[in-house]
Length: 137
Image (cartoon, rainbow, N blue to C red; front, side, top):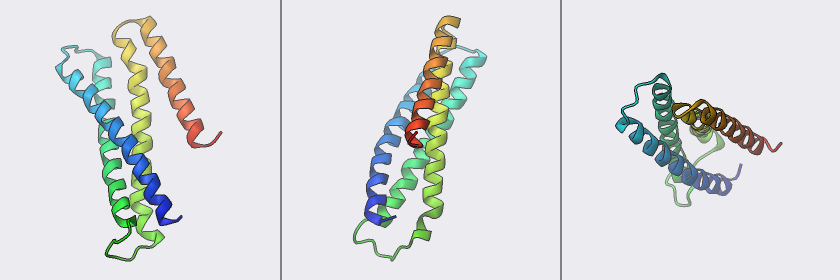
């Protein structure tokens, strides 16, 4: 993979991950303030925490890649230099997306069964379409 390409892709994924991290942290803050003490709220809190953490790790891993692939970097780099960091970024990005889709699916269950069914369908379809897009299906 060319370093320019890796740099450009990393820049794009940083923007997406930053937005998703901020979104997850905003949900987390609302859950902290909310006085709901149900099982669903506990699961929402846990999955949102995982999503926020994963997206933050993704941002910092990709920042390292951008630093290493930018013209003027002081050390010579090879493909092996990116194996761990790009693997970490990819893994945490996918986990973040999956857990955020689970959060979407669970949110409606706090309100009612009908809303819960609707948000579960939306969360499932969102994850399905994202996976189809990533896999070029």
